[in-house]
Image 1 (cartoon, helix red, strand yellow):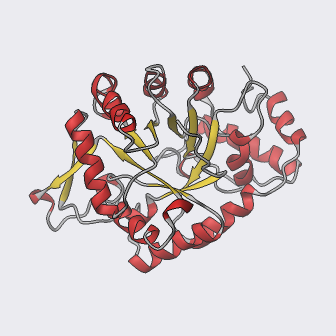
Image 2 (image 1 turned 45 degrees about the horizontal axis):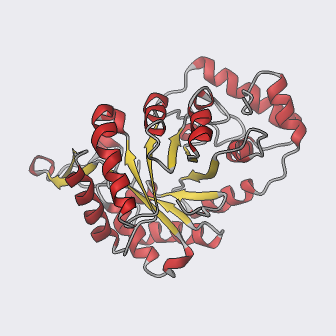
Length: 325
């Protein structure tokens, strides 16, 4: 794979697919423009996000930008098909405020993967994608993912239809099995390598180093838990409530942040991008945002100066794991 320069921060476009709340087309455009204005050049979307709405809005926006100035990824594994039973309803069961007149249909076959890409190209209006990820394989069939979907993606890469392929998941088991195929260029690690918890460090990160696979790190705020300086019980964690033990752990990290005058969200953004003696496979951090100010704020946080002593303190107090193992 040719090395892709993602930049330090990318935008995950679930929010412009009406994640949690409806946005107008103009509001979605303003968010994407704010991302562009602060220097974001990597945009990630998926058919799953708003039943294609995210892809359509992102594609319309990127059509106004030079194609050689941005990187775009989408995902495969779910086809969108008519859903007569959903007419007049909203897709709230999947957290998207969009009409439920389409349904997600799993398809990990080679034909289904190719069809998914073709339909995503039509929705976005783009001429190509730079990266394709298999989306949430453990939610359908990891066995089928390993046997069919990943080889199908590798075939598309071999044909020159995409630069890089990967798997995106919140499951360390699925991520590990996928990287060990030796076929991938990237993993999108969602919420499993964050300042709050680092289960990916046990096996996934070492496997990425061993296989020369890069990590696109997503959900680094753990769905909101790390997005404020004073995390409380009302915070969202992995789209649900925060376990009491994890909240106590994060509050201890927040106390160290105050001690060193570091903002917790800045530490969450920068944590996995630090230099690592063992070699850091993390290529970029992808964050969402449902308002232009979120993008501007996150860009400022990514540039906040954090003293190395802060990271040492977290490690010495057993609040984060060593990464160079």
